[in-house]
Image 1 (cartoon, rainbow, N blue to C red):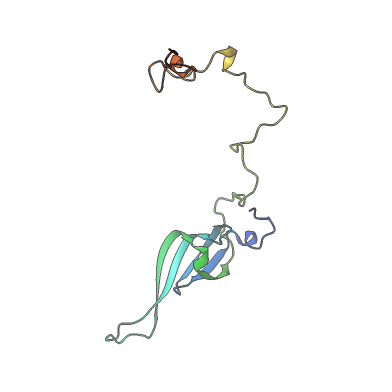
Image 2 (image 1 turned 120 degrees about the vertical axis):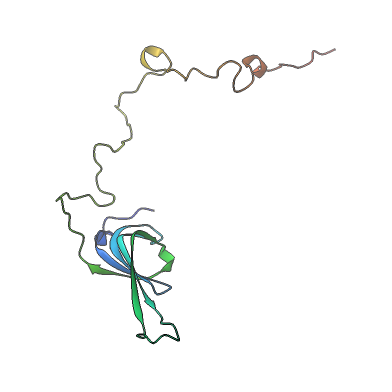
Length: 157
């Protein structure tokens, strides 16, 4: 399954997002990635949850507890709500990183096609590369004579 560039989710990459999960916790962080199951990754994430007071302690009715988590993967089937909480993160160094699925840099592998030069079989000048000559005698299997048809068969009487 491929994800189109026009997808609504793609337009929200790098935005600050708020995700509410089934157990009523709220996660706020920068939306970095998602997949077909709607699993999402939030960077610089914080968890917010409501803490119920102890019955014998006189305190405010509900307190909000906050903790810093960092990089978080949220399972898609547990997410109830996902909303934009703020603009994308500003780049400090001014370098604009490509979005997911963008063009790669010089280190990206490309498939060979027609017209591409091929290496001759066996390496340069027909000499096999070291370690690729085949099985070493006495190691890793039966001898070549044992693999011939009729080896070890009794002659007919």
